Length: 398
Ligand code: TXA
Ligand code: MG
Image 1 (cartoon, rainbow, N blue to C red):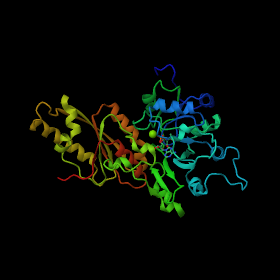
Image 2 (image 1 turned 90 degrees about the vertical axis):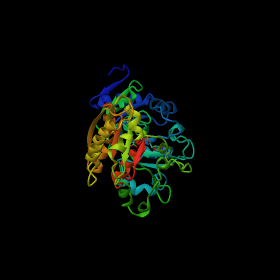
Image 3 (image 1 turned 90 degrees about the horizontal axis):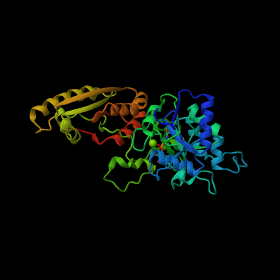
Image 4 (image 1 turned 60 degrees about the horizontal axis):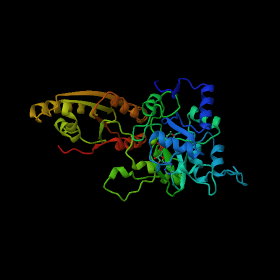
Protein backbone atom coordinates (compact mmCIF):
# COMPACT_ATOMS: atom_id res chain seq x y z
CA UNK A 1 0.00 0.00 0.00
CA UNK A 2 1.44 3.34 -0.99
CA UNK A 3 -0.43 5.44 1.51
CA UNK A 4 1.48 6.43 4.61
CA UNK A 5 -1.71 6.83 6.61
CA UNK A 6 -3.36 3.57 5.65
CA UNK A 7 -2.92 0.22 7.29
CA UNK A 8 -4.65 -3.05 6.50
CA UNK A 9 -4.75 -5.72 9.16
CA UNK A 10 -4.88 -9.20 7.69
CA UNK A 11 -6.20 -10.64 10.87
CA UNK A 12 -8.51 -8.89 13.22
CA UNK A 13 -6.50 -9.67 16.29
CA UNK A 14 -7.60 -8.35 19.66
CA UNK A 15 -4.85 -5.77 19.50
CA UNK A 16 -5.89 -4.60 16.06
CA UNK A 17 -9.48 -4.27 17.24
CA UNK A 18 -8.44 -2.30 20.31
CA UNK A 19 -6.39 -0.02 18.09
CA UNK A 20 -9.40 0.43 15.79
CA UNK A 21 -11.68 1.16 18.77
CA UNK A 22 -9.15 3.76 19.92
CA UNK A 23 -9.26 5.49 16.55
CA UNK A 24 -13.05 5.53 16.73
CA UNK A 25 -12.96 7.07 20.19
CA UNK A 26 -10.66 9.75 18.81
CA UNK A 27 -13.31 10.66 16.23
CA UNK A 28 -11.67 8.98 13.20
CA UNK A 29 -13.63 7.06 10.59
CA UNK A 30 -12.42 3.58 9.66
CA UNK A 31 -13.58 0.82 7.30
CA UNK A 32 -14.61 -2.58 8.60
CA UNK A 33 -16.47 -5.66 7.38
CA UNK A 34 -20.13 -6.35 8.08
CA UNK A 35 -22.04 -9.37 6.80
CA UNK A 36 -23.65 -7.23 4.06
CA UNK A 37 -20.93 -4.91 2.70
CA UNK A 38 -17.94 -3.07 4.17
CA UNK A 39 -18.94 -0.07 6.26
CA UNK A 40 -17.18 3.24 6.86
CA UNK A 41 -17.89 3.89 10.53
CA UNK A 42 -17.42 6.70 13.01
CA UNK A 43 -18.79 7.87 16.35
CA UNK A 44 -22.50 8.55 15.74
CA UNK A 45 -22.59 10.97 18.67
CA UNK A 46 -19.92 13.30 17.26
CA UNK A 47 -20.79 15.72 14.46
CA UNK A 48 -17.14 16.19 13.52
CA UNK A 49 -16.68 12.42 13.23
CA UNK A 50 -19.88 11.94 11.23
CA UNK A 51 -18.99 14.75 8.87
CA UNK A 52 -15.66 13.11 8.16
CA UNK A 53 -17.60 10.12 6.80
CA UNK A 54 -19.51 12.30 4.35
CA UNK A 55 -16.24 13.94 3.32
CA UNK A 56 -14.32 10.66 2.79
CA UNK A 57 -17.12 9.18 0.68
CA UNK A 58 -17.99 12.45 -1.04
CA UNK A 59 -21.54 11.66 -0.07
CA UNK A 60 -24.33 14.28 -0.33
CA UNK A 61 -25.09 15.56 3.15
CA UNK A 62 -28.85 15.06 2.78
CA UNK A 63 -28.48 11.27 2.73
CA UNK A 64 -28.74 9.95 6.31
CA UNK A 65 -26.60 7.20 7.84
CA UNK A 66 -27.44 3.93 9.57
CA UNK A 67 -26.48 3.68 13.25
CA UNK A 68 -24.83 0.35 14.14
CA UNK A 69 -24.97 -1.10 17.65
CA UNK A 70 -23.62 -4.24 19.31
CA UNK A 71 -26.60 -4.94 21.55
CA UNK A 72 -30.18 -3.96 22.27
CA UNK A 73 -28.88 -2.29 25.44
CA UNK A 74 -26.71 0.05 23.36
CA UNK A 75 -29.73 0.88 21.21
CA UNK A 76 -31.84 1.64 24.27
CA UNK A 77 -29.25 4.15 25.44
CA UNK A 78 -29.93 6.11 22.26
CA UNK A 79 -33.70 5.89 22.60
CA UNK A 80 -33.89 6.71 26.31
CA UNK A 81 -30.51 8.08 27.33
CA UNK A 82 -31.36 8.86 30.95
CA UNK A 83 -33.43 5.79 31.64
CA UNK A 84 -32.61 2.75 29.49
CA UNK A 85 -35.74 0.91 30.63
CA UNK A 86 -39.07 2.39 31.58
CA UNK A 87 -40.73 1.74 34.91
CA UNK A 88 -42.66 -1.11 33.31
CA UNK A 89 -39.32 -2.70 32.51
CA UNK A 90 -40.07 -2.47 28.78
CA UNK A 91 -37.49 -1.13 26.46
CA UNK A 92 -38.25 1.94 24.47
CA UNK A 93 -37.85 0.00 21.27
CA UNK A 94 -41.39 0.15 19.87
CA UNK A 95 -43.22 -3.11 20.48
CA UNK A 96 -44.13 -3.46 16.82
CA UNK A 97 -40.51 -4.45 16.14
CA UNK A 98 -40.39 -7.32 18.65
CA UNK A 99 -41.10 -10.06 16.10
CA UNK A 100 -38.78 -8.55 13.50
CA UNK A 101 -35.91 -8.14 15.94
CA UNK A 102 -36.19 -11.60 17.41
CA UNK A 103 -36.22 -13.18 13.95
CA UNK A 104 -33.66 -11.09 12.04
CA UNK A 105 -31.26 -9.50 14.53
CA UNK A 106 -28.37 -9.71 14.52
CA UNK A 107 -28.44 -9.60 10.74
CA UNK A 108 -28.95 -7.67 7.49
CA UNK A 109 -31.99 -5.66 8.60
CA UNK A 110 -32.23 -1.93 9.41
CA UNK A 111 -35.23 -0.47 11.25
CA UNK A 112 -36.42 3.11 11.54
CA UNK A 113 -36.94 4.37 15.09
CA UNK A 114 -38.25 7.58 16.65
CA UNK A 115 -35.61 10.14 17.55
CA UNK A 116 -35.56 10.92 21.28
CA UNK A 117 -37.54 14.12 21.86
CA UNK A 118 -34.92 15.98 23.87
CA UNK A 119 -31.17 15.97 23.56
CA UNK A 120 -30.67 12.50 22.27
CA UNK A 121 -27.03 11.46 21.92
CA UNK A 122 -26.97 11.17 18.11
CA UNK A 123 -25.36 13.90 16.07
CA UNK A 124 -27.99 15.65 13.89
CA UNK A 125 -25.72 14.97 10.91
CA UNK A 126 -26.53 11.24 11.20
CA UNK A 127 -30.19 11.72 10.35
CA UNK A 128 -29.83 14.59 7.88
CA UNK A 129 -33.12 16.13 9.01
CA UNK A 130 -35.13 12.94 8.67
CA UNK A 131 -37.79 12.56 11.41
CA UNK A 132 -36.57 9.08 12.40
CA UNK A 133 -33.20 7.38 12.66
CA UNK A 134 -32.10 4.08 11.15
CA UNK A 135 -30.54 1.36 13.34
CA UNK A 136 -28.95 -2.00 12.69
CA UNK A 137 -27.49 -4.76 14.85
CA UNK A 138 -25.08 -6.50 12.46
CA UNK A 139 -24.15 -10.17 12.82
CA UNK A 140 -20.53 -9.75 11.77
CA UNK A 141 -18.31 -10.24 14.83
CA UNK A 142 -15.85 -7.50 13.82
CA UNK A 143 -18.55 -4.87 13.34
CA UNK A 144 -20.08 -5.75 16.69
CA UNK A 145 -16.74 -5.92 18.46
CA UNK A 146 -15.97 -2.37 17.32
CA UNK A 147 -19.28 -0.98 18.66
CA UNK A 148 -18.68 -2.88 21.88
CA UNK A 149 -14.99 -2.06 22.43
CA UNK A 150 -15.44 1.62 21.62
CA UNK A 151 -18.72 1.79 23.60
CA UNK A 152 -20.00 3.90 20.72
CA UNK A 153 -22.93 3.61 18.35
CA UNK A 154 -21.30 3.76 14.93
CA UNK A 155 -22.76 5.68 12.01
CA UNK A 156 -21.70 3.68 8.95
CA UNK A 157 -22.61 3.89 5.29
CA UNK A 158 -21.14 1.49 2.76
CA UNK A 159 -17.40 2.16 2.44
CA UNK A 160 -17.38 3.00 -1.27
CA UNK A 161 -16.88 6.30 -2.98
CA UNK A 162 -20.40 7.67 -3.45
CA UNK A 163 -21.99 6.25 -6.62
CA UNK A 164 -19.68 3.23 -7.00
CA UNK A 165 -20.76 -0.37 -6.34
CA UNK A 166 -20.62 -1.10 -2.61
CA UNK A 167 -17.41 -2.81 -1.41
CA UNK A 168 -17.61 -6.48 -0.50
CA UNK A 169 -13.90 -6.90 0.18
CA UNK A 170 -11.14 -4.82 1.77
CA UNK A 171 -9.46 -4.36 -1.61
CA UNK A 172 -12.61 -2.65 -2.97
CA UNK A 173 -12.43 -0.18 -0.08
CA UNK A 174 -8.75 0.40 -0.76
CA UNK A 175 -9.49 1.18 -4.42
CA UNK A 176 -12.13 3.76 -3.50
CA UNK A 177 -10.90 5.38 -0.30
CA UNK A 178 -7.14 4.96 -0.43
CA UNK A 179 -5.37 7.58 1.70
CA UNK A 180 -8.65 9.19 2.78
CA UNK A 181 -9.04 7.02 5.91
CA UNK A 182 -6.56 5.81 8.53
CA UNK A 183 -7.54 2.12 8.72
CA UNK A 184 -9.28 -0.68 6.84
CA UNK A 185 -9.91 -3.89 8.72
CA UNK A 186 -9.79 -6.86 6.36
CA UNK A 187 -12.30 -9.52 7.37
CA UNK A 188 -12.41 -11.30 4.01
CA UNK A 189 -15.33 -11.21 1.56
CA UNK A 190 -18.82 -10.33 2.86
CA UNK A 191 -21.22 -13.25 3.13
CA UNK A 192 -24.41 -11.45 2.01
CA UNK A 193 -22.92 -9.09 -0.58
CA UNK A 194 -25.84 -6.61 -0.80
CA UNK A 195 -26.84 -4.04 1.80
CA UNK A 196 -29.38 -4.48 4.57
CA UNK A 197 -33.13 -4.25 4.09
CA UNK A 198 -34.38 -0.89 5.44
CA UNK A 199 -37.85 -1.11 7.03
CA UNK A 200 -40.15 1.49 8.56
CA UNK A 201 -42.46 -0.40 10.92
CA UNK A 202 -43.76 2.79 12.52
CA UNK A 203 -46.20 3.08 9.66
CA UNK A 204 -49.21 0.93 8.97
CA UNK A 205 -48.74 -0.92 6.71
CA UNK A 206 -44.99 -1.24 7.27
CA UNK A 207 -42.84 -0.10 4.36
CA UNK A 208 -39.64 -1.57 2.97
CA UNK A 209 -37.68 1.52 1.93
CA UNK A 210 -34.77 -0.43 0.48
CA UNK A 211 -34.87 -4.14 -0.36
CA UNK A 212 -31.79 -5.99 0.89
CA UNK A 213 -30.39 -9.00 2.70
CA UNK A 214 -33.67 -9.97 4.39
CA UNK A 215 -36.39 -10.74 1.84
CA UNK A 216 -39.82 -9.12 1.92
CA UNK A 217 -41.34 -12.62 1.80
CA UNK A 218 -39.50 -13.55 5.02
CA UNK A 219 -40.78 -10.36 6.71
CA UNK A 220 -44.38 -11.02 5.61
CA UNK A 221 -44.14 -14.56 7.00
CA UNK A 222 -44.00 -13.08 10.49
CA UNK A 223 -47.75 -12.48 10.17
CA UNK A 224 -49.74 -9.77 11.98
CA UNK A 225 -48.99 -6.26 10.75
CA UNK A 226 -45.89 -7.58 8.94
CA UNK A 227 -48.01 -9.72 6.63
CA UNK A 228 -49.13 -6.46 5.02
CA UNK A 229 -45.64 -5.05 4.43
CA UNK A 230 -45.44 -2.99 1.24
CA UNK A 231 -42.43 -2.03 -0.88
CA UNK A 232 -41.70 1.64 -1.42
CA UNK A 233 -41.71 2.67 -5.05
CA UNK A 234 -38.17 3.29 -6.20
CA UNK A 235 -38.20 6.78 -7.74
CA UNK A 236 -35.41 6.12 -10.21
CA UNK A 237 -37.45 3.50 -11.96
CA UNK A 238 -39.68 6.17 -13.41
CA UNK A 239 -37.56 9.19 -14.10
CA UNK A 240 -40.48 10.92 -15.82
CA UNK A 241 -42.55 10.98 -12.64
CA UNK A 242 -41.06 13.83 -10.65
CA UNK A 243 -43.91 13.65 -8.13
CA UNK A 244 -42.40 10.59 -6.45
CA UNK A 245 -40.37 11.71 -3.46
CA UNK A 246 -37.83 9.16 -2.22
CA UNK A 247 -38.58 7.86 1.25
CA UNK A 248 -35.05 6.66 1.92
CA UNK A 249 -33.19 9.71 0.63
CA UNK A 250 -30.36 7.54 -0.69
CA UNK A 251 -32.69 5.99 -3.23
CA UNK A 252 -32.80 9.10 -5.39
CA UNK A 253 -29.13 8.99 -6.26
CA UNK A 254 -27.59 6.99 -9.06
CA UNK A 255 -25.84 4.16 -7.31
CA UNK A 256 -23.84 1.02 -7.67
CA UNK A 257 -22.46 2.12 -11.03
CA UNK A 258 -19.26 0.78 -12.50
CA UNK A 259 -17.41 2.99 -15.00
CA UNK A 260 -18.63 0.82 -17.87
CA UNK A 261 -22.20 1.37 -19.07
CA UNK A 262 -24.56 -1.32 -17.86
CA UNK A 263 -27.28 -2.81 -20.07
CA UNK A 264 -29.73 -4.77 -17.99
CA UNK A 265 -31.99 -7.44 -19.46
CA UNK A 266 -35.08 -7.77 -17.33
CA UNK A 267 -36.22 -11.27 -16.53
CA UNK A 268 -38.17 -12.58 -19.49
CA UNK A 269 -37.07 -9.89 -21.98
CA UNK A 270 -36.15 -11.12 -25.43
CA UNK A 271 -32.56 -10.61 -26.41
CA UNK A 272 -32.05 -8.10 -29.22
CA UNK A 273 -30.31 -9.32 -32.29
CA UNK A 274 -26.62 -8.59 -32.43
CA UNK A 275 -26.97 -5.71 -34.83
CA UNK A 276 -29.18 -3.87 -32.35
CA UNK A 277 -26.73 -4.45 -29.55
CA UNK A 278 -23.87 -3.01 -31.53
CA UNK A 279 -25.93 -0.10 -32.78
CA UNK A 280 -27.17 0.77 -29.33
CA UNK A 281 -26.10 4.31 -28.42
CA UNK A 282 -23.72 3.03 -25.80
CA UNK A 283 -21.75 0.76 -28.03
CA UNK A 284 -21.56 3.05 -31.02
CA UNK A 285 -20.33 5.91 -28.84
CA UNK A 286 -17.57 3.74 -27.50
CA UNK A 287 -16.31 2.09 -30.62
CA UNK A 288 -14.36 4.98 -32.10
CA UNK A 289 -11.11 3.08 -31.76
CA UNK A 290 -12.50 0.08 -33.52
CA UNK A 291 -12.26 -1.97 -30.33
CA UNK A 292 -14.99 -2.65 -27.86
CA UNK A 293 -14.68 -4.47 -24.54
CA UNK A 294 -17.86 -6.19 -23.53
CA UNK A 295 -18.59 -7.87 -20.22
CA UNK A 296 -21.42 -10.31 -19.84
CA UNK A 297 -22.74 -11.24 -16.42
CA UNK A 298 -24.71 -14.39 -16.83
CA UNK A 299 -27.17 -15.80 -14.33
CA UNK A 300 -28.56 -19.27 -14.74
CA UNK A 301 -32.11 -18.51 -13.69
CA UNK A 302 -33.69 -18.24 -17.15
CA UNK A 303 -34.73 -21.23 -19.17
CA UNK A 304 -32.37 -20.09 -21.89
CA UNK A 305 -29.93 -17.64 -20.31
CA UNK A 306 -28.91 -14.56 -22.24
CA UNK A 307 -25.27 -15.38 -21.68
CA UNK A 308 -24.92 -17.62 -24.68
CA UNK A 309 -27.48 -15.68 -26.68
CA UNK A 310 -25.77 -12.38 -26.05
CA UNK A 311 -22.39 -13.81 -26.96
CA UNK A 312 -23.79 -15.15 -30.21
CA UNK A 313 -25.59 -11.95 -31.01
CA UNK A 314 -22.53 -9.83 -30.27
CA UNK A 315 -20.46 -11.91 -32.62
CA UNK A 316 -23.16 -11.59 -35.24
CA UNK A 317 -23.37 -7.88 -34.53
CA UNK A 318 -19.66 -7.25 -34.85
CA UNK A 319 -19.53 -9.05 -38.19
CA UNK A 320 -22.57 -7.12 -39.35
CA UNK A 321 -21.12 -3.81 -38.20
CA UNK A 322 -17.89 -4.42 -40.08
CA UNK A 323 -19.58 -5.32 -43.31
CA UNK A 324 -22.34 -2.73 -43.14
CA UNK A 325 -19.91 0.11 -42.75
CA UNK A 326 -20.33 2.66 -40.04
CA UNK A 327 -18.00 4.98 -41.89
CA UNK A 328 -14.75 4.97 -39.95
CA UNK A 329 -16.53 4.01 -36.80
CA UNK A 330 -16.96 0.34 -37.55
CA UNK A 331 -16.46 -2.09 -34.72
CA UNK A 332 -13.16 -3.70 -35.53
CA UNK A 333 -12.89 -6.11 -32.68
CA UNK A 334 -15.18 -7.12 -29.87
CA UNK A 335 -13.48 -8.60 -26.83
CA UNK A 336 -15.94 -10.44 -24.65
CA UNK A 337 -15.39 -11.36 -21.01
CA UNK A 338 -18.03 -13.55 -19.45
CA UNK A 339 -18.70 -14.23 -15.80
CA UNK A 340 -21.23 -16.58 -14.32
CA UNK A 341 -22.94 -15.12 -11.27
CA UNK A 342 -24.65 -18.40 -10.44
CA UNK A 343 -28.18 -19.70 -10.26
CA UNK A 344 -29.18 -19.16 -6.69
CA UNK A 345 -30.31 -15.69 -5.51
CA UNK A 346 -27.98 -15.79 -2.52
CA UNK A 347 -25.00 -16.66 -4.67
CA UNK A 348 -25.86 -13.94 -7.20
CA UNK A 349 -26.21 -11.34 -4.41
CA UNK A 350 -22.89 -12.32 -2.91
CA UNK A 351 -20.91 -11.95 -6.15
CA UNK A 352 -22.69 -9.11 -7.96
CA UNK A 353 -20.78 -6.02 -6.79
CA UNK A 354 -17.42 -7.81 -7.00
CA UNK A 355 -18.19 -8.88 -10.58
CA UNK A 356 -19.11 -5.33 -11.65
CA UNK A 357 -15.83 -4.07 -10.20
CA UNK A 358 -13.86 -6.90 -11.79
CA UNK A 359 -15.20 -6.12 -15.27
CA UNK A 360 -14.39 -2.46 -14.74
CA UNK A 361 -10.84 -3.38 -13.80
CA UNK A 362 -10.64 -5.42 -17.01
CA UNK A 363 -11.46 -2.21 -18.89
CA UNK A 364 -14.68 -3.20 -20.62
CA UNK A 365 -16.85 -0.44 -22.13
CA UNK A 366 -20.21 -2.03 -21.62
CA UNK A 367 -21.56 -4.72 -19.31
CA UNK A 368 -24.59 -6.75 -20.33
CA UNK A 369 -26.30 -8.25 -17.29
CA UNK A 370 -28.92 -10.93 -17.31
CA UNK A 371 -31.63 -9.95 -14.83
CA UNK A 372 -33.36 -12.34 -12.47
CA UNK A 373 -36.90 -12.73 -11.25
CA UNK A 374 -37.91 -10.32 -8.47
CA UNK A 375 -38.61 -12.89 -5.81
CA UNK A 376 -36.71 -13.38 -2.53
CA UNK A 377 -33.13 -12.11 -3.00
CA UNK A 378 -34.02 -11.23 -6.60
CA UNK A 379 -35.85 -8.08 -5.49
CA UNK A 380 -32.70 -6.52 -4.01
CA UNK A 381 -30.53 -7.73 -6.90
CA UNK A 382 -32.83 -6.11 -9.48
CA UNK A 383 -33.13 -2.92 -7.40
CA UNK A 384 -29.34 -2.50 -7.46
CA UNK A 385 -29.02 -3.43 -11.13
CA UNK A 386 -31.69 -0.95 -12.23
CA UNK A 387 -29.82 1.81 -10.46
CA UNK A 388 -26.55 0.75 -12.07
CA UNK A 389 -28.03 0.46 -15.57
CA UNK A 390 -27.92 3.07 -18.31
CA UNK A 391 -30.21 0.98 -20.49
CA UNK A 392 -32.87 -1.47 -19.37
CA UNK A 393 -34.11 -3.91 -21.98
CA UNK A 394 -37.62 -4.83 -20.92
CA UNK A 395 -38.95 -6.21 -24.14
CA UNK A 396 -37.49 -6.27 -27.60
CA UNK A 397 -39.74 -6.31 -30.60
CA UNK A 398 -38.01 -8.18 -33.38
O1 TXA B 1 -25.94 -3.15 4.92
C1 TXA B 1 -25.96 -1.95 5.13
O2 TXA B 1 -27.01 -1.33 5.44
C2 TXA B 1 -24.62 -1.20 5.04
C3 TXA B 1 -23.70 -1.70 6.13
C4 TXA B 1 -22.41 -0.93 6.20
O3 TXA B 1 -24.38 -1.70 7.34
N1 TXA B 1 -24.83 0.22 5.13
C5 TXA B 1 -25.41 0.92 4.12
O4 TXA B 1 -25.49 2.28 4.38
O5 TXA B 1 -25.81 0.43 3.10
P1 TXA B 1 -25.79 3.36 3.23
O6 TXA B 1 -25.57 4.67 3.91
O7 TXA B 1 -24.97 3.06 2.06
O8 TXA B 1 -27.33 3.22 2.94
C6 TXA B 1 -28.28 3.59 3.93
C7 TXA B 1 -29.67 3.73 3.32
C8 TXA B 1 -29.78 4.94 2.41
O9 TXA B 1 -30.66 4.64 1.32
C9 TXA B 1 -30.39 5.98 3.33
O10 TXA B 1 -31.08 6.99 2.63
C10 TXA B 1 -31.31 5.15 4.20
O11 TXA B 1 -30.62 3.92 4.39
N2 TXA B 1 -31.52 5.78 5.51
C11 TXA B 1 -30.60 5.95 6.49
N3 TXA B 1 -31.13 6.64 7.53
C12 TXA B 1 -32.43 6.90 7.21
C13 TXA B 1 -33.49 7.59 7.86
N4 TXA B 1 -33.32 8.16 9.06
N5 TXA B 1 -34.69 7.66 7.23
C14 TXA B 1 -34.85 7.09 6.00
N6 TXA B 1 -33.87 6.43 5.32
C15 TXA B 1 -32.68 6.34 5.91
MG1 MG C 1 -24.31 2.90 0.14
